[in-house]
Length: 308
Image 1 (cartoon, one colour):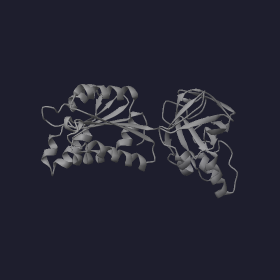
Image 2: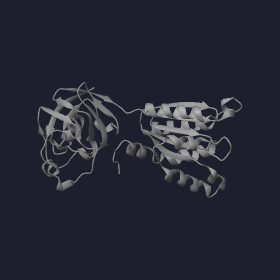
Image 3: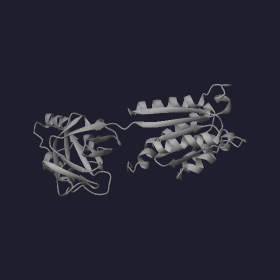
Image 4: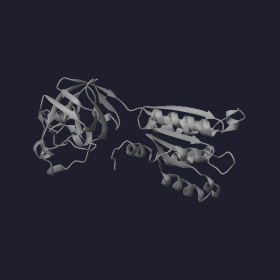
């Protein structure tokens, strides 16, 4: 829980905001505020925790709204949040879209008047998910985004217990290390199924309905009689992302020509990213390593966040 200390408005960008006592949040942001509009930085928030640090360094008192924040809060170090985290109460809901921003230095009225600014490093920005009124003294619940991952191993023999599935657990280990390293909450579900296109289709449909963030399959991307994974995924995705798999094939196919035979595919299925990887442990290690380099950027793009 965090407490709202002040809600603030200005009629021009780059200027100090004035405490308003109460604001109305709409689909475009704070009503009558200069930063409202159809973009990802509709609402700005700054914690008193950041303001107090600045006061200690400068020896001067900072007024609410002086750093052009719409909402001044207490109870949480806001700069530790992540994009797609949310703040809500019974009336309103905000989704974090950006941590910090570019500082314009002496061209900014705030910088000229105050002499510095904490917003570029410790202010956060959000967009309105649910509109309504917010006033001084209200409380908000902080809800970190939890990323859902579903890994699917396709193998008749592994499913029958003839040999151990090593590829699925290898992907899971790399995904776990990735999200842990970024201090992001996550859940991982792992399914081991036989080479059955119907079962794969059922899992993909469930992931679409549940808005699973990332779906990764391993197995069935070759040219054998039971290699059908790309065809099933082609039938359910809304957009293909060909570049990433083409890059991986060419990168590793230079030394291992057999890698060029993989029909791996990546795409967007509703609110989910889907990646079909080969079945070997070495291959999934190579593919997953390359995918993770741009995974968060893909997730942000899919959620309409501009992180360029």
